[in-house]
Image 1 (spheres, rainbow, N blue to C red):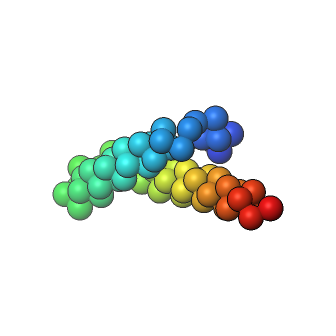
Image 2 (image 1 turned 180 degrees about the vertical axis):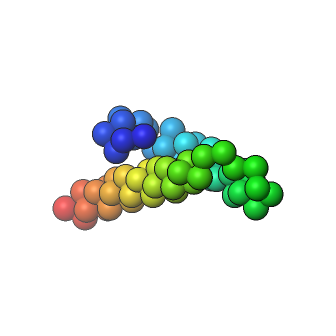
Image 3 (image 1 turned 90 degrees about the horizontal axis):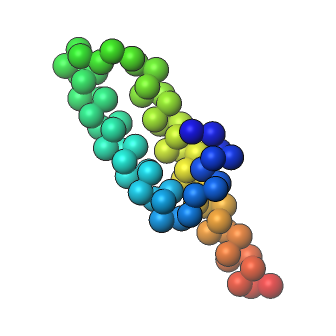
Length: 70
């Protein structure tokens, strides 16, 4: 997913997506270990999606903190 698409989601939706992607990443790693992984690029995509979502969540958290202090 692109960052633009992720930014349109709520915090709860983002957290749910991260959990889903973590589960998918676990399954893909298991497939890789057993030699059944068809598309190794999917591992990279999932890792990057998780990172993008966590970055957006953190940006929102920091923004809320800054607005709370001001």
